[in-house]
Structures are given as C-alpha cells and as structure tokens.
Image 1 (tube, one colour):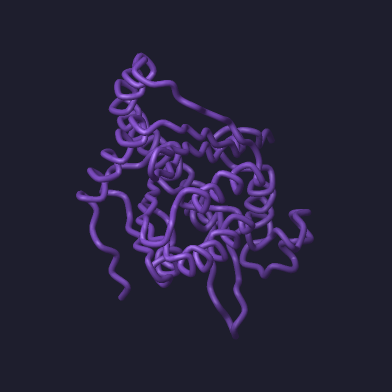
Image 2 (cartoon, helix red, strand yellow):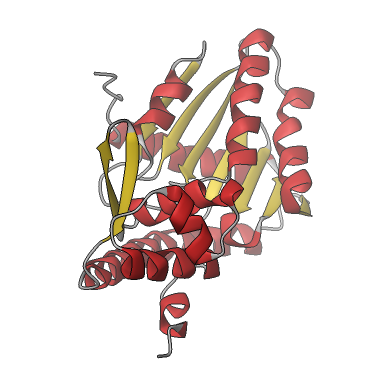
Amino acid sequence: MNYSVLRDIGLTESETKVYLALLYLGSTTSGPLTEKSGVARSKIYEVVERLITKGLVSYIVKQKTKYYQAEDPIKFQDYIDQKEKTLEQQRKAMNELIPQLQLQKQSAKKSSEAQIYEGFKGIITVAEHTYLKLKKGEEFYSWGIPTNQEERYDLYWKRDHLRRAKAGITCKMLFNHGTPRSTLLNRNSYKGSEARYMPPGIETPSWFLNYKDVTAIFLQSKEMVIEIIDKEIADSFKSYFDAFWKQSKPFKKS
C-alpha cells in the first residue's frame, strides 16, 4: 500500500511511521511503539505529541502510564479540513498584507537595510539583536507566533525571557490559535511579558518581531528570517500589531 499520501498532506516521515505503528499495535506504551515504528526513543514523545495536536492520536493513563492509540483514519478528513481552513486564513491575511508590502517596495524615500539569516543560529542571532537596540523600559512586539516549536527553540525562549526581564525590557506577544495554554501560561509568568492569542480567525504564515526601526519576518517552514532595518517599514508593521492587539483578548490564566 502506498502511504506517501500521508506525507503529501503534511505528516513527517516520523509521524507517518508512528501513526502506522499505532494502527498495527492498537493501544500501547512508548516502548513497543518505539520498537515498531523505528523512531528513536529520544524523539518518540515529541512525534506523538505532534500527532495528538493534529487530532490523529489520543491516549489514556493506566496506573500512571500513558497508552497511546491511533484515532480512526476518518480523522484525516478533519485534519485536511483544518489545513484548508488555515490556508484560507493565511491567504486572506496575505491578501491584506501584500498591498502594504508592495507600497513599501515602491517607496524610495529612504534606503533600507535587509539581511537574511538561516538556521537555528541565524534565528537566535536576530533575536539577540534586541539587546543591541533596546534599553531598560523599552519594548518589542511579536505576533503570528507558531503553535508548535522545536524543543531547542522553546528552551532558548524560556532562557531569553529571564534575560529580558533582568534587562528591564518588556514585550507583547500574540500566538496563533492552537498553541498550548501551557505555553502562554509560561510566557505570562515572566516579568514584563504579556502573551495573548491572535484575534479569532486570524493566523499568519510567518511570524514577526518588531521594535524601533527593526522588523524581522520569520519563515518557520524554511528556518529562515529576514531582518529589515527601516523606521518607516517598522512603523507600518507596528500599526498591524496594534490593530491585532486591540482585537485580541487578555489571556485568562484560570
């Protein structure tokens, strides 16, 4: 049987192996699942969590042990429907953004500086730039933050929030819907940080970081970021953030 269609609709190779292994095994723990799927034990929980987020796997707890099981394959229809809905939201957001980007491209009032950074280190380099320009009492803004992040990014952001708080820099963040509540609870736990969900029905295909004359556009799927140094462009993007923030609701911690 050709299972490549599972990858075509967005599952990674590891996710495909784990899902098929669960179909074969039925309700099982991580040990047999690791052996059957061939996915490394160090990665198995991360892969399973992604499948749970996609609604394709569920679990129950027996005697403090998690037993995982594949959802009915009919769930793939729900998964595809959600991807189509998200794509339509992204298309709508881009249709609104494209004219503004075109205006910025055509503007010749002031020269701009732009640079592309790639990979984990490149993305962290751009994040570190905030400390070169922001001082105590100043603020940065971020929105369209993706629902799932690799562990190395999550660990970095947690450490960085401690550093940011110590430096007296504040921040406002808008996460895409579907981001675990635990993530927003964590981000709101740091001094000077306020995290919310994006306004209903709005998701962005990329996420943005904005402060002073800096606008950084993070392309999550390509692990790449474009950093633009231009006050006029930064002010335009700040107005987008302000509009989204005004429409968003404060995060309820309980």
